[in-house]
Amino acid sequence: MSPRPPTLREKRRYILARIEPAGILLEQKDLYYAISDATTSLWGDATTAIITPAVVALEHGYVVVRCRRGTERELAIALSTVTACRDVHICLQIVAASGTIESLRSRFRKKGPHKKEAEPAPAGNGAGEEPVLPECTFAKKTFLIAQCNGQKVDVIEKGFKNTNRLFLTKDDLEDLNATTISDRI
Amino acid sequence: MKITDAAVYPYPLGDASVRRLALQAAALGFDSIVAADAPSGTYAGVEVRSGLMIRDVPIKDVIAAAKRYRDSGRVISVNAANNSFNRAAIGVKGVHIIRGIQNADKLAFDHVAAKMAADNRVAVDIDLSPIIGRSVARQRAIHRYMDIMVLEQRFEFPITLSTHARSLLDMRNVRDVAGLCSLIGMDVPDVQRALAGVGTVLTPVEPSVKVIA
Image (cartoon, rainbow over the protein chains, first blue to last red):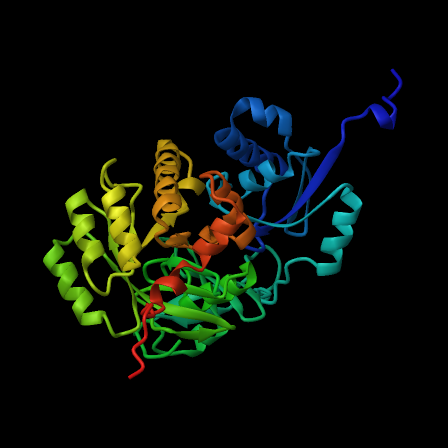
């Protein structure tokens, strides 16, 4: 079977979105299901069939989503309603739309992947042991620093009961009385 | 004109500190945010306004709270209830925003309340969280907001837009907000006006006639 000539192929557009929080690992297939669910829930089966959303790339904390040309607006609105992927709370921030995947790739290569400054400290002998994350104190509780990028610091409470992520800044960690309501920020 | 998210909930109500919410708001294209129970100030170029959310209290408590915090610079908002409560709340001096109209009963905000809101410069808040979420609540919210927009076109009362973000991940950028608002029939000028709604209700009304001597 010979491939269809380019002039007879349906025109497509690609949307680049940044996955937040930075540093979480997602499967391309799971993300496709999350986007497909969001699109179907918002626009219904008929419009989703016209949009034909598809995840074509998932690299360095960015996702490239394909749609039919002319339906970018609908897909963008649907992407803003994606809140979870496999019970992991996420958010997709749209960066750009383009006619080729390559131009979007060059775009996030230029921006660079989500930086992760909080490298885990090497554990005891370095083999077979879990890496030790740096610790910090906030609101009289001890947290593990999961992610650190510029002013932004993502932390997870130490222990096994509460593993929710908290989003802080370096200024928050420097402020000893961060929970008291002061007259300044 | 300041582009404002009219309600966010910092730690401990949410999972992000007020500074981090301000950083995120700056990245998403906002100039200011209204943060519940947080001190006001400026961080990363974003103005943080302190918000007071009054809910589930009788009208006399609303009057008392409005009187107490009227001159404190806080953005005072009241959760909508039935029609008589809403009309009374709109008439209280110092109340800036009526929230949660999508959860109130169908006749809670009628043309009389709309006229009063326009006269007293009290904004009606469009909460985007039910539109971002997925359930029957989304359909009901879209329906109610479309009805609110019909009244807004007629009476021109102020509108505010809020994400009601309890997490950093619940915040949306200005373009997404405009896209979500298009679902309820708001065009770009409407969205721009609504994003500047907090500034509108906080600006004192200038008398149309000025007595010089």
